[in-house]
Length: 346
Image (spheres, rainbow, N blue to C red):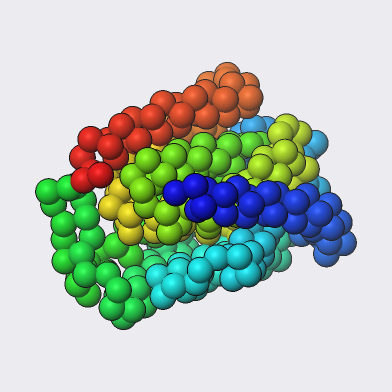
């Protein structure tokens, strides 16, 4: 155990140093290639409403021009360091494939659909439509299912443990189910990236908590990988303290959402995972409830979705939302660690 902990801390240190060097270079490139936020007034989903409230909550007059692809740092550094520093088993290979795929999907989503059409009002409205969101969701689910089938094809995983007394055979059907759930995990992470420091703070807490749980359980395979991610997260969080020097966007949020679900699933900690990430699922649920209610009942459940924006619209300052969500996540991670020790066979 001592050896793997030493390796993990060395990897964490290397990742932190590399991220410190990489971050200013990346920020300059994002400015140079105009990969910055440019929120403008537009219709919502082609309807009669507009995004004036969202612009107010995001303080777009002050924050427009902020680089919105800072997650590229996580997407680039983590796979490279994992390949250089970690034992790349068949499972780790599949993990890296998924990490890169979802980072790339997030990259395309921001570069083309967010930044590429920032001045096209009709396209911006279309991207808010139910049909477009549904298409993106289905496409991403297919990507997730493919990754799970790659995992199945490795032949290294026979069962998925739910508790010490319950394990499910890892079959093609479970690949499909896991792919669907995994995509919602990624979507939940993406929607959490809506306020300075919110997403990266939450996922840093989750990452550290998962590392603690795996260490106590004696499961060491993913510890060096999570250490590398933690190094990136520390630097990322530094640049995300309000006012944020950059926002993460899909290239960072999607791989992080994929990572925590993947690790939770393969380590037999899926129930602790759901506890640790519960706040992100609540955020996602608030958005989906709003979309479905607007689509089928033409009415709002929340002033504005997701939940953190609703609370801001109710009068909570952004820092109050962010810090309380961090605290909620910390408590839920304590519960998750407790559950992992109680229901796991360790």
